[in-house]
Amino acid sequence: MKVLVVLGTSTGGVGQHVRGLVRGLAGAGHVVVVAGPSDVLAHFGLGEVAAALVTLDVTDRPHPARDARALRVLSGVVAGADVVHAHGLRAAALAVLATARSGPPVVATLHNAAPSGALTGAVYAVLERVVARGSALVLGVSADLVERMRSLGARRTGLAVVPAPPPRTAARERHEVRADLGVAASAALGVVVARLAPQKGLDVLLDAHRELRDDPEVDLVTVVAGDGPLRDGLADRIRDERLPVRLLGRRDDVPDLLAAADVVISSAVWEGQPVGLQEALHAGAAIVATDVGGTGAVVGDAALLVPANEAAALARAVRDVVVHGAVRDDLRSRAVERAGQLPTEDDAVTAALAGYRSVLPRGLLGA
Image (cartoon, rainbow, N blue to C red; front, side, top):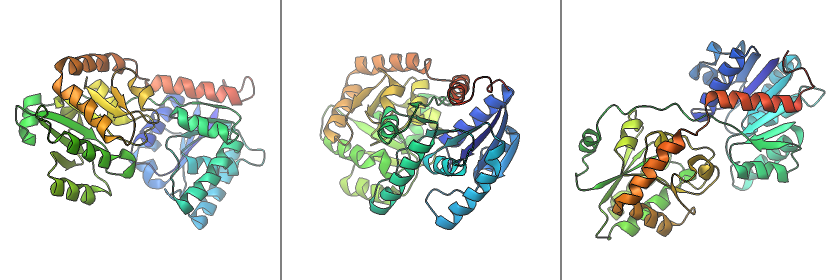
């Protein structure tokens, strides 16, 4: 079988997932061609695992002239494929349009919620309808994405299987990490791994810290590993309100931070299958997270889940973990158990092949 995999701009989880999927499909004897932006193809080493690469100029925002060129390129390569597997809404919309005239079936995997906003939201709403109605199968990384596509007329839908990142071992002892961060031995350490962007709800994290600041039983310092467009605004607020939160920027020692944490916190307003929380499970961390998108499905019962955008609820849950050792120890035990249940790369390949089987003529999958 020949599979054409299409993706757009990616700097993290989507690209890693595509690389693993392509490697697994090729290992199973299928011919895989990958189409995407040249920098993405190079960054994730897709030339090392795919039979061929096609450069496709797909950016993270609609651009009429560029998108028209990308559509022409894609229309020229879909004819030789048995199935097209597109990752991301923009890539999937292009794949649907490129295969509209008797092309191969399109399997679309949606990894993120569509952007909101007046003009941008209207454009992406159109793309959602194109993908829902033109794809043979639409997969979403969370149940809300699946339901959204179903409501827009998708014929066949399902949950995407995305493998968890492989476990990474901490290189330093807990006390070394805390000392390097300047956290007193008597204080609890909170850790957040997140891009400093609106989706991560970091204003709510700061609101929760403000709620906890005057609690005599809570001595908590939280560090945030990550960077992004909200950094300056968050830093100003932390300084002005004297909050015990430190922005560390991008870090190469995330496993060390997670292993040293008394509590790992996610205040996101939406997540698909959050990589940071999967890493926290591998680290055996006590987790407090907002119950959004696919977060609950990822962590199972190995976290205290609270509603999004509710700082008081987030503060109470964090307090429970910091103040009560039994709660913390129970969550850590559950995290270790849950980590062993996370999907692997082999699981993702098996699920993808099952999806292809559901949209292909009988017998073609083995070709």
